[in-house]
Length: 372
Image (cartoon, rainbow, N blue to C red; front, side, top):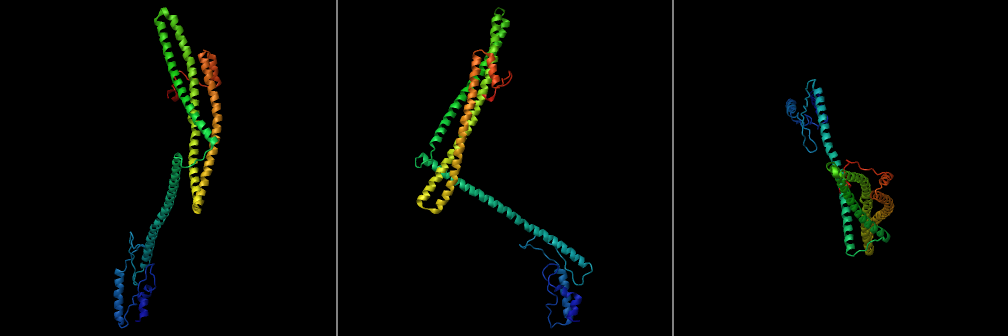
């Protein structure tokens, strides 16, 4: 028997056909045959070699790029003399191998997703670091400028007209705060007076019952205290109304403008700090640093001018609103007290209706402004 016929019977051409089921190529059985051997020896050696391959070379290991895998699968390689069912077994093994390979590819794709997330996190961290650097530089410049101004080493930008209005507003805030404090004290003390008047009226009524000889006198004084205390409740409502509106004007409207003044002053210090740096770079003739400083200076200048315009508008509206509110509140305070102390009950009630002031009921508790 020649070698060609032997290959046809034993399937040697199949093993020498390159890749087998997608794995590395197996060496042909007769490739290493010695020409000096006889045909019988070659047949015996080929049979032994084929039997050995069927037994020991039928295990294939799947490994990742790192030569490690959490799973292995044994795929039997059938011999040329396999049974008719060997083809279906090979297809089944091939499908299982592809399934594990797809799982391995999926696991290997996960690090790329994690890598993308790490890149995004790195970009966000870099942006935060840049923001921190800018904040640090700005804070340093601000502190240096403020200390230098207090020590008289640096000049400051001054708007004479605006500074005059700011100073006047600060003084107005102090005066209105004092007025609010006194108004609260008056309201609290008048409320205590009404409580005492009511207790006095109850005591006089009790004595009128137990003292027949002075019954008429006690009843007259008891009725007077009731009338006065009732009118006092009306005046107390007017005082509460005045105090609440004064609290809004002093504690919210004026305070909001004061906060804008603080922002304006901070922007002014930063503006002067960048202006001083720009002047220093221009004097030194450093063109690159001068250009960078000029850009930052323009940004601070726009911010400073915007806050200054905003402050001027707010102060104008505040002055108009303050005059309008206080004119009404002072009129209420005057008319209510004048009607009360003159004993003109009708005029007092008219004042309350004119300004839509609600009179507190008998069992209604005092407000926060009355107790503080």
